[in-house]
Length: 430
Image 1 (cartoon, helix red, strand yellow):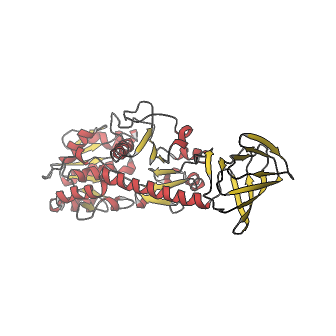
Image 2: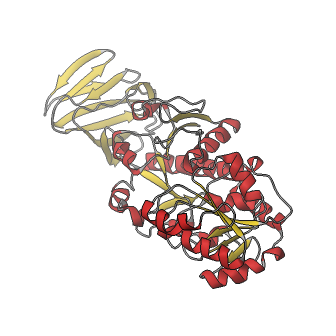
Image 3: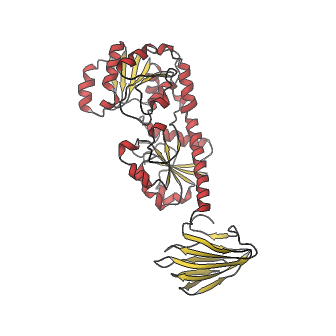
C-alpha cells in the first residue's frame, strides 16, 4: 500500500508551537511509517517531518491512495486524477458554507468525520476516526490539583467569561489558555480579572507546558456554547487523569463519560454542583478512557481500516465501471465468438496489448481510429475495418475530436476479459 498524506499547509507539520491538526497529522504519518506503510507526506516548505514536500497531484499516479487532511479546496483536483482520495473533514461543514462543494465532489472522495455528531446529513461518510494523541507525552497524575484550567481561543462562544465566573464562585484559581480571537471581548471580559492569583492567562502553551498544566489541575472546564467537531484539550486532560466538566451539546458527549471521566453540566450553577463531585472521579479511569479511544495507535489502526476498505471499494468499482478511456458493451456472446461495441473518447487510447487465445476484427462505425499492430500505424475512418491476429501487439487510439465507435468481433478458444497481456498502458495497468 502506497499512501500520499496531504497535511495542513498553514503551519509546520510537527510544529514548533502547538497546533492541533498539524500535530495529529504528524502522529498519523509517523504511526503509518512504524506499521510499514509506504507513505509520503506533502506539506508546507518549512515542515519538520521526514516526509517530502512535493506537488502531490502531479505525482498522483504513483500512489494507491491520497489522504487529504488539508482542506476542501483540494477536492477540485480529484476529477483530474484516477487515484482514490480520502478526505478528513476537520471543520464543521454546516458552519463553513462548504457543503455544496463537498456534495459536488462526493463521488470522487471518501469522507471521514472526526466525530459522529460533526456529520452533515447531506454527505456520505465512510467512517468516523477520532484524532489520536501521543499518550507518552502526557503524564498520568494520581492526585487532584488545586486549580481549574480552561483551554480555548478567547471568544464569547468559547465561554471564557463563564469559566471565570465559575472559578470565582467555586473559590478556586483558574488558568486560561488560548489565542485572543476577539480583542474587544478580551479587553472587557478578561483583562479586568487577571491578577495571576485567582485568574491567570497564557496565550500560547507548548506541549510540555500543556502536560504540566493539565496534570496539575483539579478539573478542565469546557463551558463552550458553540459546537466543536473535536477538542483535543478534553482528551489530553483525561490522559493526565484530570476530569472534565463541560457544557453538553454537539460532540462533547462522545468524549466525556458522564459520571466516569467527568460531568456534563448545563450552565454555571450545575457546573458548580458537579465540581464538588470531582473527588469521586477515578482519575485512572480517565487515563484508561483516553488510552482505549484516543491513543495515536488507535487512530492509525482505524485509518488503515479505512484505507483497506476504500481500496476494496475501488477494486469493485473498477470491475463494474467504465474504463477511463471510454466504454464497451457486449452485444452478443457465444462459446467461440463475442461481439462488442467499443467507444473511445477523444484523445484517449487503449493499452498496447495482445491476446493469447483469440483474434479480433474491428469495424469502424463513426469517428477515426488510429490502429497500431506490431508497431505499424493504420488510420481508419467510418466504414473501414481491420483484422487483429492472435498474439499480435495492438492498440487503438482516437485522434479525432468526436467519440470513436467500432464493432469488435472476437473469435477463439477462450474469450475471457483476463486474456490480456498489457505491454504499455496510460492508466498504470501494465
